[in-house]
Image (cartoon, rainbow, N blue to C red; front, top):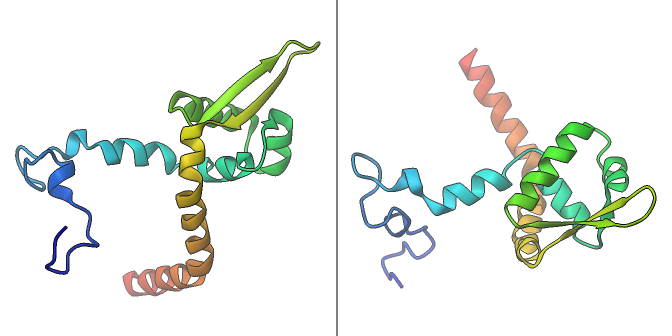
Length: 140
């Protein structure tokens, strides 16, 4: 562990594969953190993950929980979450077939950090809105 006061900073050198930060030869193009974060930063991902945190949900229930999301966007987002291993889709042999979505162990492992980020966003929403207004006013 570093003792120069930088212990709280992320080790960019390590994630860049020791190739340096930025510039020619940098490993940021293949950065594993960026590859994971890019897929969990979508507009609906956090809300869907939080909706699935307590118990499995059927598609219709998710639509009711997130009334602003289109059916197409919900379907695509659930597929993206499945592809990354965060969500499990189970089809039950009923007539008509019913489908239920739940968090996988990987998805559950992301819940606490995601919840903390959502709580941070709620606490700091006003400050962010004020900063945007100040910036926009200065930009004219």
